[in-house]
Image 1 (cartoon, helix red, strand yellow):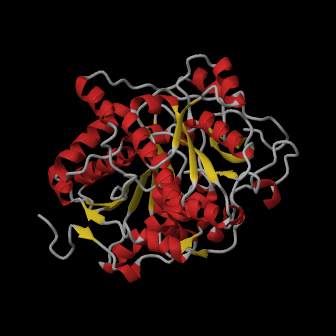
Image 2: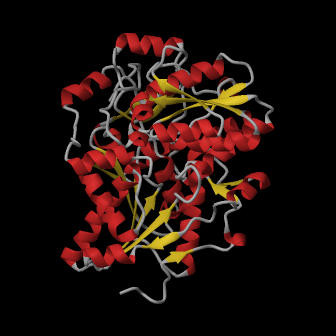
Image 3: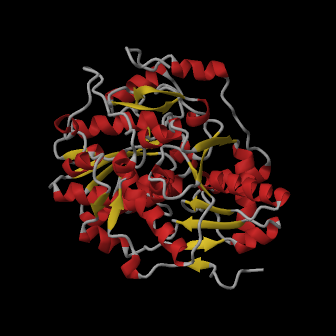
Length: 461
């Protein structure tokens, strides 16, 4: 039965919503490795990044020292449209599993984009508007980031050009139409509209695309059109900074009821939601104030953490972006067409990569049929149809809860429910029809991607 002292949903009051973002890098003794200029192999300076990114976002990207960054009032006002998001006690799931574990999830799907992506999209659009730009370009996998950015750009009157991974463009037509409703142009990637897109199509005829391909096209368009800049929905330091509102709210809500999670679980593709959720908790761990178990969950079809190499690599398939030191499968690696489009990126956030390399967090890879089984189990008792990406975290949360059932331990589990899956019904249909398949790349498949990782002194792996 429910613990009567703790409600099903914990909300913060308006004056408890964060007015500052938390920068976990400031508390990391060993900082993430800097971005490198691929031509000189030297750390990038701000002036080299400003032709690609907005000026203020460049400053945030390079800021390793300030733990707290003030959230501009206009962004705070926008956040109040849908924040605070609820922290939910999964009483019904606990009962169904017959587990002594206490399960909580931070639900980020209660906005038009259906995901956490709006937290950073509105910030990046705001800074583009403040700089006087005409518009921005971006990529999107599952479409949640593209949807969030198109909404944010509409709010500020900016043009928005989205390159959507081709397999998702075809699998999720309604997500595409939401973007167009908000005024964005949406192009399936790789396309013949860019030089880099044409090169990728020539090298990989019939490819279903990848986030790396779409990034290359979006960057090319941004740098070839005056008044435009490129924005990214994951991976970058600035994005993890904006997404820290998730973890800050979750921690504040748990603190209100004197709840301390034993483990914190999130899906991992590029790192935006996981990084945002764990940031304030990781900060405590880094400062020796508390200890937590952090678990990143990725698809077995795109196992950056669990099978990747920790090395400097390009963030995009076209190799026009800076080099980032991260866990990577190689920028030329194109994952299978699984349905968790937001997790089909070859690399991982430099912040999370450094934390993982230091042993401060762990990672697990799971197959998509088991993910959808967990998603269905969750939906039937908790009343929310989860996105395929979020369902990776649900899968491991259920696994951990069942371990508690076996051992009798009363652990407290927190996971991130990043968004809803109502535009992912083709995937659910395939799961129900028994036509969904699992694909795990072979060592030979991965070797092809690793072969493309740049070779230079100090980048051995």
